[in-house]
Image (cartoon, rainbow, N blue to C red; front, top):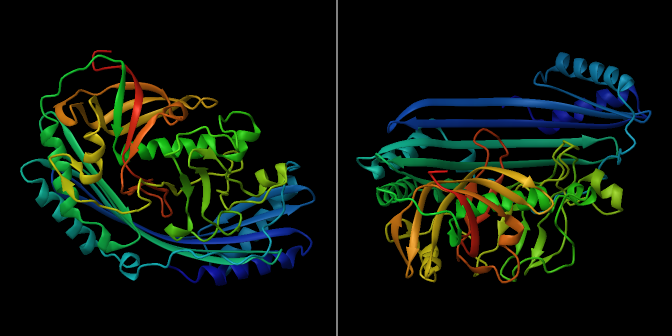
Length: 461
């Protein structure tokens, strides 16, 4: 990486203050390494890496706000950034919602960086991929192994100065037979947690058991959602439900203080556990409980949304006011409160904790993934999408038949209402987010047994 982010942020702030000490000024620097080893047809076909240091300057002056950024962090680049950002703020529209800068505050207890994860080499990633491919056997394998290392710093004219460092290793791979795909995913801040061989074996087992699928009529069915499918539910809950901007604009279903969810549901956002020490505003992150045993407890705030209602920022700013404050490290607390990355495979297609949920279903459907999901009505969180990478019929507590994919139209909020959650897995799996982001979201999700899911179409329409 080029230079020290904290030193660059301090220099950028100093130069901007030298132009106008009365302006409100924020300087931030992200030094990110993202490396990706991709494979298809069971061989590595691409190994790419990006190492970028990006500086951003945000100004509020005379009631107007403007920002600019550069990847040139030498003296000439910094000077040019300051000049053009001051030029931009002079002609920017008025910003009546400006909340001010983040005040001085120390960061919380963000997880320490694992040195092995921060220094992953192409050879390391290739070995993970090789283990995955070997475990797949005669099937075709495809996917990626991604490593990230991020160092961030922010300094502002209100006196805030804060740094953060995080690293992650993630694998997302499929095994493909002639008529079925099986998938396995994992993400962790610790390199030793990600076992390519175990993931490949699981993907292959799912692909083999997905052969010869049959079509089941659309209807409401009892379901067991595997962790990857649950992760999609969590993302929509956080971004469309517990986002304070959505609540203020009355497009969210969330009502703080009400028992809107089943008592089995406790949902927290825990950025510090992923090594994220502060948000885009410079506010320290903290573990935030959104749902406590079924009751909606709190919303995610950035400085702007907090100022509107007289609250405190929860450290969920993403630097895009139009989006509001987003929870990016959600964890659905599993049945025993534990967390993990990879559980032992039990049986052909599910891990031990998911198998326990399947055993409690008389007749229902096991779903691996929800994908191509889109919100139809944010006020009720009705979402439509498709199943993917494995769907099976459950009868008498056993997986008995592979099914063809469904389309569904389901209110995620209704699916979790009181009396609807019949069980959670005992292990929360870490599911990777964006493939290419240096500080990607990560979802901690156990499997979930739900009383009803509305499948509205099948392969025939």
